[in-house]
Image 1 (spheres, rainbow, N blue to C red):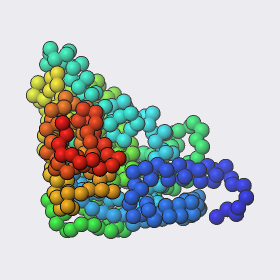
Image 2: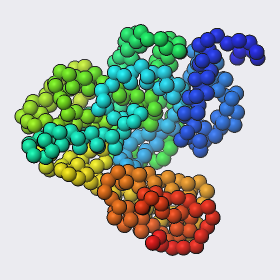
Image 3: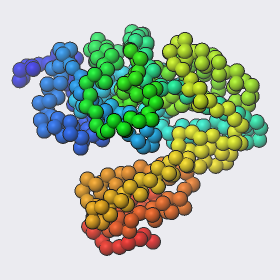
Image 4: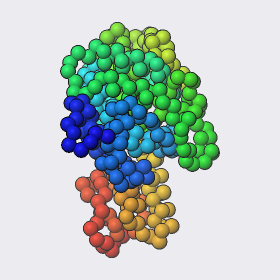
Length: 408
């Protein structure tokens, strides 16, 4: 470590500041994890130690925690150690401003100002525009990639990013060679060789091999759950986005992770795109279209996209979202019954966060009656701890307990 009062070289000083910024980013939603709490006991000392490791290129990736997340869909998650999350945010903060300008407008995942609701609104506008406000024919082609994250080729991705960094001729305030070093460490790290598995072996039952990193071919696959994986996923499919927009001439096209949709007035035109898309993905990116997830249908039949069901003049919440919300309510009802009709502290905070997450999704659609109906199924004792705000839009914790049962 640099001795006290000794001036730091330019990049070293900037790296240290950037690690503190990355630490603040990483702790936003991970303050209660065991590795985060342990890191924060002596966070300044730990950041200085991490700084030493990174600038001297001695950084080693720690052990991940692997588990199955069942909602909203069954997924295998690798949760990185907190200090590794700091490095992930550092990489993101350096790399994203370089690659972001090259992304198309209609790539929605892990981008500021974008996301599922933006993607849904864009798809609605695509359908309206292509059908001339629902007065002419328009067809929707929806596809996704088989086991996308488990199929990403690490060498192709690394070369793709290195070429981008070499072509980037604008000044940057960090050491590019250090970024390449960190990228190489993260991209070629195999978390299955150093992980703690939480849960039971039965949790992995019925999970397709294409969804598990333990079954990924050599040199392929990235863990779901890391910030870098989300960024890498956008970078890897960016050439495909430009191929569809520029070479296939698709005006109405949008992608969220590996779920992409095209809208066109001709069914035959869209059908002819499928083999071209399949060939590009296979030849250039070593990816495969999911054979059972190719949907080509008229817009009047509707399309399910990003948790919504789009029909002419109206957007519905998908049945999966409604069922998951209902199941979450039943789970919390059992929790409060098993705990003597009480819920406080971290459990109360988690309950409010769970409910508001679903309510936030539902609020983007005409679901006032649905939100009211679902919230009325909560155990009455919950209303001793929370109240409803914003027209059944969110739950808020009461400052003190007030007796009461059902909201009016």
